[in-house]
Image: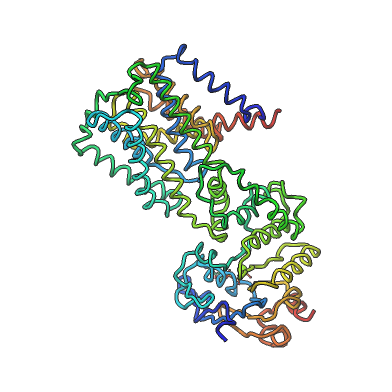
Amino acid sequence: MSEQIILETRNLTKGFKGFTAVDNVNLKIQRGQIHALIGPNGAGKTTVFNLLTKYLTPSSGQILFKGQDITALEASAIAQLGLVRSFQISAVFPRLTVLENVRIALQRKEGNSFQFWKSDKVLERLNPRAEALLADVGLLDFAQATTLDLPYGRKRALELATTLALDPEMLLLDEPTQGMGHEDVAVVAALIKKVSAERTILMVEHNLHVVSQLADRITVLQRGAVLTEGDYATVSADPRVKEAYLGVAADEEVAA
Amino acid sequence: MEFIKSNKFNIILIALALVIPFGVYPVFLMKVLCFGLFAAAFNLMLGFVGMLSFGHAAFLATGGYVTGYLMSNADLTPELGILCGTLASAVLGYLFGSLSVKREGIYFAMVTLALSQLLFFFFLQAPFTEGENGLQGIPRGKLFGFIDLNNNLSMYYFVLAVFLLGFWLIYRSVHSPFGQVLKAIRENEPRAISLGYSVRQYKLMAFVLSAALSGLAGSTKALVFQLESLTDAHWQMSGEVVLMTLVGGMGTIFGPLVGAAVVVGIENFFSGGELGTYIHIIMGLIFIICVLAFRNGIVGEFNKFVKNNF
Ligand SMILES: Nc1ncnc2c1ncn2[C@@H]1O[C@H](COP(=O)(O)OP(=O)(O)OP(=O)(O)O)[C@@H](O)[C@H]1O
Ligand SMILES: [Mg+2]
């Protein structure tokens, strides 16, 4: 049973000055699944991600990845273990080219990143792989563009390509389709579906249509605590979930 | 722009550097080269990692003192003396870097300043530095045991070679796989971490490189002037290298050299004259003008001009 669980949190808690942003959260993420984390604004979803990847230190609780306690590890060490995140606010390297953005991720496993005496021409052998990754997200035509000049949606796609370049066992995606046009949302959703074949994904997503399409399992957070968990049908039928979202728009989305 | 990046341009520069001592006083040129290398080494941290160290005088002085002491007492050849000074600065850089690169922004500047002040007082008290007098009459020795460096022209070509080596190493580091990671860190540090880069180690590596090359500059300078004194370890020296780098253009390859030439030139021009006592005010004014009018420094503004007009 525990072999099936790739990531687990035990009573994960984070307080900010007397206010509890994440409250005794117990998650169990099954290997190979797409698991969605949803909840209203400010529910603590991003904070959970920050705790899992050590961008914040938990106030209490434990995090286990592949059976190993990673609560005390450094952020970069967690990424090296294969638990890699993306950010809610698009995280790219603005003044590098689109190709260089992906290449910097590919470079890490090359083991040459401390070599200051070599020409960066040696990185060019990574170009074909970087281009293939860009093609997957529809960015190949922009390979030589400066990332700064890309529209927001494309930056998000680039961030996804960069994350995938690490070929991580488990991906944490914080609102991967946020700020994208309709067509791009479909492209990215399809891509997430495609890459989920060989890995586990935990994603925060406000677009419930995307959630209904992709997620095997859904956890609903409210004010830092787990409200309920289950598959899409169970969760969307739960009256407490509708209530948590309150807003009419969200209600309609749940119904859709 | 193409031309400036071409090999031809570099060859012309080097050719110029080879003939210039026949027109300009070599000791002045050597001073510019030493400070140019020092500023370029400092710029590796400020311009290419984005961290402002306010303690780089420590590395300049350590290189100078170690080389000066060994040349005076251990009868080394100058290349070995310089190598020892450089290594000492690298070790010190590792020490200071381990204590400081965790910090960011102003805190990093403050920690480096505090550490270098500590070292200043050590140099002030330690017997081997001769305190306020400094190490005087450091012998230049014979390069590889047979080229007498007491001739200023020979010394100049030696300093030029050291400078080119250091400069090349900086250029290489910036345009290397390592340099690419530094760029990523400067652009977006949290993202670099999330890709699995242990950012601190890269910063430490850059700091050690920067310290070693600053030490190389200090060691060479000690031989040029045959003198090593507390001026090099003083916090004002840490400030001066910031000034040189900003005046020339931080984050550019040639900026620090140009900045060093301007600052050393102005100092030489005014020192001795009636205006000598006002030198700090003059430097302060230049600094203010630079910050207000040429944010990118001389080379930075020049690059921008060329880019926009050609
Ligand atoms: N570093 C911090 N310091 C103090 N409070 C914080 C910090 N980070 C988050 N919070 C607070 O914790 C709560 C949860 O924030 P979080 O960003 O995790 O929400 P979220 O579920 O990701 O919301 P959204 O859907 O808007 O992205 C919010 O009230 C937020 O203001
Ligand atoms: Mg969020």
